[in-house]
Length: 90
Image (cartoon, rainbow, N blue to C red; front, side, top):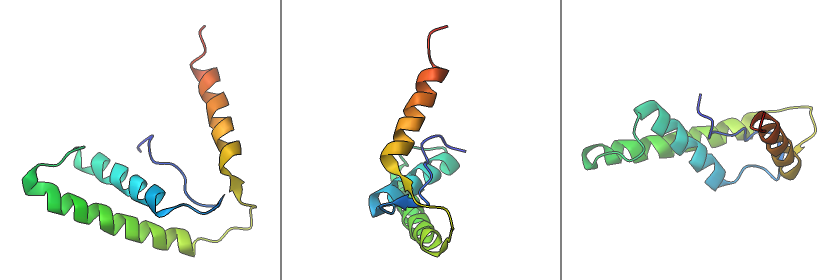
């Protein structure tokens, strides 16, 4: 889907409201095909972001897992290592 939407489930500490909102914003941008809606579409765009963020927070609150929570710093280091390997000069 969209590379900017990150996994938010099973992290310690839990995803913040800002992270959930950012994911919702990226989703609406992807679906609408617009990063900045026109004035005529601004209300619908912002309403969609708010509703998707709300539903996403409910989803994250309701999901259960037996896996231990992931550490954000460890996951970021893994992603950085994958990126360095992927984009390393040949």
